[in-house]
Amino acid sequence: MREHAGVSREELKHSAAVTVAVLLALGLVAAWNVLIPGVDAWENIVAAVIGSLRMTGPVAAAFAAWVALRKRRALRGRALTTWRALKAPLAIVVVVLGSFAATVLVLAVKTVLTDQAGRLSLSGLGMGMAGLALYSVIGWVAGWVVPKAYTPPLAGLACYGAFSWLADDRGWADKLAPGTGEPYDLFQGLSGAPFFDQTIWLLGITAALLLGWAALVTRQALVLACALLSVLAAGMGVSRVLAHPKPAAAVEIAYSCQDWPITVCVHPGMRAGLTELGATFTQIASRLAGTPAAFTRVEQRPLDEELKPANGLAPIHVPDLSAGFAEEAAYEYIESLAARCPGTVADGYREIVMAWLRGEPLPGGPLPEHQYAASWFSWLSEHQRREWLRMFYSDFQNCWLSSTHFGGGPARAQVAPQVLPTPETSHVYPVYPETTSTGGGTPSSSPIVTTVRTGSAPG
Picture (tube, rainbow, N blue to C red):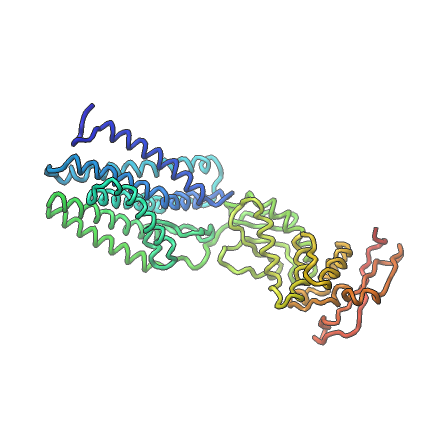
């Protein structure tokens, strides 16, 4: 068995192979947790592998620190040339970048075989590699400067804490950490310019640390000069990163749409959810038909954009395609139709209508009038409920619903007009819109009996 500077070559090769396997497994697990479920887009893959650096980076730092302290103990008292000093840390960087490339390859196998939306961001992958190299060099320098047994795990934990703090800062500091920012919105896209600027900064600071350490151990003035140039490059990268604003608006995309029974359009990477979204929102569209909120088109919008239904369009948010995504999108959209009402009484009536629109069982509510209203509303047929909503949509939207809209409440149920249905007449139900606005905006004070013709008696 050959020895290299007191360290077995076979031992180094075995350690490198184990490290690659560990980084690959950890990278796949971490990337899988970052992947947006159900999304077939290249941007999703790139964002996932960059997000995996939060876990793989500290492991790479710990491995580099372990090799560094072993090398320092083996080379104690020996003079080092520049190449001999740099060869080991550069080899570690190559090993960890190989694991990063393997992670990208494994995740890209499925995307290559299917029709993926978007495009592969090479600048994003380059930024991820530069970030992983920085982790490795930090670990190497830490292991060389403090050659103690506790240094490798401490270096890994320190890197995890420092870079996690930078990534979660949500200010200027998060631009210095290798990452895309979470949660990631497909509508923002992955711009190559910020990634390129981040790569300059990361490579500059990595080279500055590595060359500065090499200048310290070799006493070479030329190496120190190169380290100073790397500091200038890192400074230029920081200035470019901080000067580049984050994308404020979504990029234009070509929607993937389903045109029947209503038009539903989503991001191309989420086209697998069209069928489920169409089935869910078709029912909602039928219940809102004839109201100011009626729509014939459902369109996915960026996550940071406020939902404002208008002009036959129902905007929705779909962060991912995990189980129940269509119900969650429908819930958020229906909640945007009418704001919550101040007071328990008004909000209880609102919740009855909301539950019907969502297709849920009608809530009884905390008050007797809510329980009566829910019972009265459930007694109506589906057609009658739609007619009722067309009549009182403005009251529902403006928190003007009261017991008079639901048969008059428990106290008035005894005196409510009783109309027996016949085959020749329609089913009749009493409504007392005393708080509704008439054409001139004046509340009506007289009870109204609303008749909805169905052509036959109800069962």
